[in-house]
Length: 217
Image 1 (cartoon, rainbow, N blue to C red):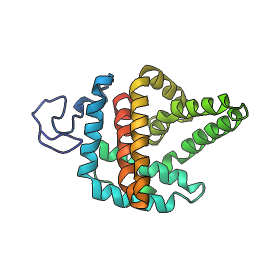
Image 2: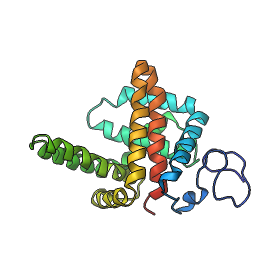
Image 3: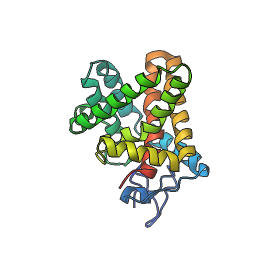
């Protein structure tokens, strides 16, 4: 049989890919283990996916950067970009430029979700220092909900509740994935524009693989 993530040949009935370290059970809705010891495997799997799809991801990211500045519509492009990477992470196909324009079905829920977070952040920033820290904590706690909405699993309010629950239950791995994904994505800025095209998808693949481990069924 082939691994649904990296497409390499693996033993029939295997529960984990020996090439990209993905937990095969996650494809059928099973939850992969979520201990800190598995974080290295999460990074390794994301790196394997990134290497196997680097050309397609670079082209997709280049176009995304060009259109993401369009107000309001950029929410749909963000959804399309992330959904394309989710498709790659699940071994359901290659990243395609057209994917950017195929996620309008979740536009309303994602718009409401992000708007509520923006309003909450503005209110929290009224309080000096502590407000900024609280706003950062809220953004981190609400982050998984963005993936659940884009993945079509949950609506806005349900996504926020699930997001808080999964952060509380898996705070260490979410924090590690967030920090690693952010640092890698931003590292591309050192190489200016071209660097971001290469590093941004890898950073997001790390977060998406963490989402795949705990996603709502």
